[in-house]
Length: 82
Image 1: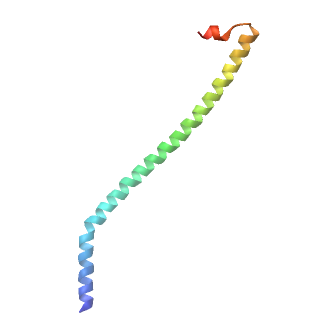
Image 2 (image 1 turned 90 degrees about the vertical axis):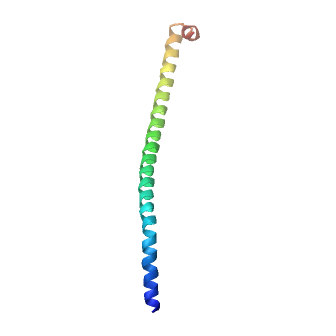
Image 3 (image 1 turned 60 degrees about the vertical axis):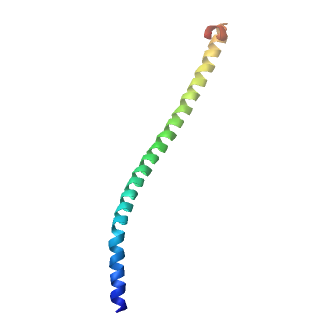
């Protein structure tokens, strides 16, 4: 008799929990999509930061060359830039 009751309870719980399981599956898919999107954003941000560092380094080198050329040509860099 108790076996029938446990089976009935189990079936009832399964029936009642099915909509919740469906909603949880949908939420898992949404979170997975957001996770993939965030991973892509982080990767793009890291790539962008690396590019900014390279560009900054290149600009600093170019600035040094311009200052050196201006010095060799006896030009006032400050006056040229203003």
